[in-house]
Image 1: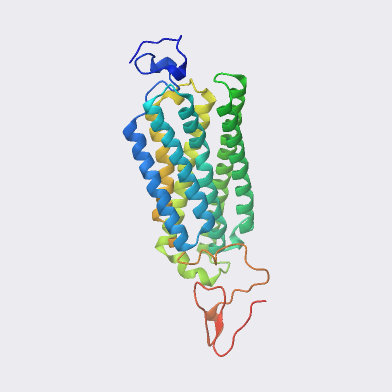
Image 2: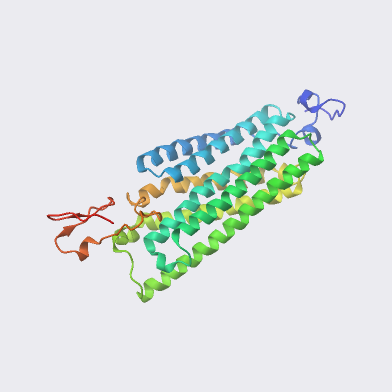
Length: 330
């Protein structure tokens, strides 16, 4: 490595003419092998989520997951470019902006699941209607994404070290902090709903929708609920880390500590996406993802075949077929 030479502009620096510690965009050379492995992992996860989403028709969930993985890919491309030349500003901005906003897409996909879980277990156990969870938290996620993207745009178009760049970083921090608060409230409400379901099941005081009986008892569905909780906690940890990192600034200790980054950034996200790929909601809901949607057609009635003698219900379809005649949902 070269000695520090502050008479050379960063864009003209090379590893032979400048020192990484004081003149690089970060004070280390990002590992090529580690970032390449993360890039490959996110590429595999993006392809898997795309395939499963098309197969199981989980469109909203698929879009959030695939976009999240795609933006993560861009971030690790930026870090690989930094390995080639850590003095250039553009690769650094690609990395910092994309890896900051990418998890917001993943949390959006996660938020879509709670309303359906409420429908499966029973809205009567919830403090809010199933659709309320989706509407409120997706709105929170959009706000977080807009703030982070806006802050990233300002940061990337400002001169290094300028007040405008500081403003952009502060807006990114605000977006991340908003995301942390939203995730925290989401976890609290999820726990509250889970406790209500557990207590009600033990007392057996309230009826449940019988068409989801088999689904509720499914080991796959129960495992999916655990996976969703794990993913949410991991993303929460990652967001807290990024708030602390950006709060210290680009010259802070966390922003220049690669081992901490390689543990608390990439793995927190690809493990979250990974468990929700292996335990994909399309697989866990056993083709009932659409039926568990909170936005049912107005006036539609769910008829339990077990309560109508001589009638058969086809699981996975929205209508109920009756022996000898048909009943239209009104």
